[in-house]
Length: 270
Image (tube, rainbow, N blue to C red; front, side, top):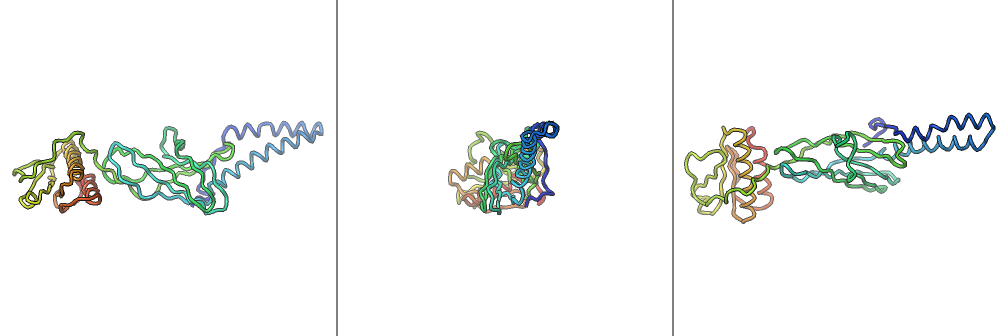
């Protein structure tokens, strides 16, 4: 929950521009006994202070959470779905959500602006660049508002718990799916190895060996990921064997996702 102690408050130049005439108007109003000048000064001060209070109240009490993100491929963007719950009776306007490390630090992208009705929730999609495969911690997000007039900027940096799964980037135009035959002895890292049982069932077994260089490992993982996608699309049952980790042959979205996740984290501690 967002509380006053967790919020950062930044007054914008327009706030000070609004207050700049207040002191001169008060001096003029008192010296000339002008009720109009005094009233105008009080009005300007009230608008500035009131808008600051309303800006702070827009974020107070909101609850934030990130829904489990769907996996993505390295080089693409993983979409984070941020849920903002509003338990209060007031409408919350102009709430911006984005990456903390954006083009301008602390400034969310325009696509991250939402309004949240009372006793309801709003959803914002935040794209996160997936540069490397594997499980990556969720990035630091920035939530802010400048409602109603932009005289203040109230926000908070927030690092949600959890991680996002990034699959290896499949090889572009990989070799054809390996023939269903027994693999030769001494096949290198990531070579397709088929035993007679798998061959009889027209299934694909994939083996990963330790000791390859980083470039070879990345190339192997990329090719195997492409073959997994090809086998799934073609409807050929496939299994995965990476060292001591063995996935029995199968098909389906869950099976494909498990294989891609194992490849994304390979090689790892077994």
